[in-house]
Image (cartoon, rainbow, N blue to C red; front, side):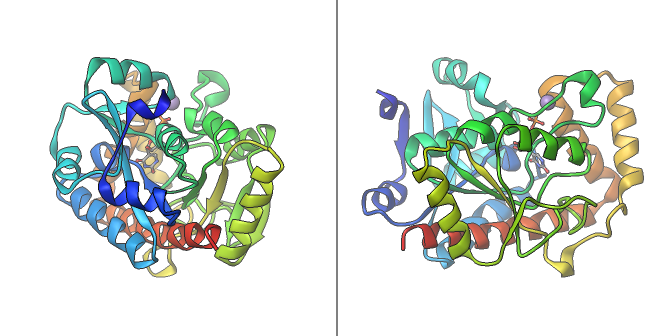
Length: 303
Ligand code: PSU
Ligand code: MN
């Protein structure tokens, strides 16, 4: 029944049938996270990086009433250019499939698609989390509740400091989500390798991460894991370097009474405008690095 709602590209179908490593990728980062044409360049190159690791990329999105597992070149282009694409999280799935609209999947929604397809590893930029003042607004990303229940490892550069990183980590702890530092003792904050917060465990190789994931899921302890992989040194910003910009973006969001799923895209867009090209360059570099590590973890899981 569930499989009736999925469609696969040939490359991904073949990889899954022959038990090759596959890495899931999200479409919200393409449609709502980056401007054109950087988004399409990033989307293509990230797929190539995964192939270079001996894994197969599966970019996930919603179109024509189906969850697409793997996108063609034309479909990637469509997600990068069209302006009428919905941002899809867990709550939106059923509506999106019945309405036939085009939907870009967030971390939460991509995890659901990956899990339905039998994909265990997913590479992205940063996860959603508890927003600043979330203790008042209750703005907590559905990415966190998804990580609590869906068996997919998310390789990311931590969480952006538009969020309350301390509360995000507390939330993950409550829900039993392991936060692994990949070759780091400190939880990275997206643009920066630092955040002032530690990780739960540090692991230094794809094999160690694969073994830990396998053990978790063998035990029937459902849910994902955050594999926090810091942005490469050469592309990193200093911790706190864009705090002023973040504060300004947050103030504007408040002034304009932006709420719900519009909050994150609004903040991302303002930060991009206020920092010019630099933050975008860092963003792209960290996604590539996450794809490389995710490809290696996916390969290790198949050995
Ligand atoms: N953080 C980023 N870039 C992004 C996102 C988050 O640095 O593109 C996107 C991801 O798709 C993530 C979503 O899953 O925003 C979270 O949105 P929300 O806070 O509304 O749950
Ligand atoms: Mn939210």
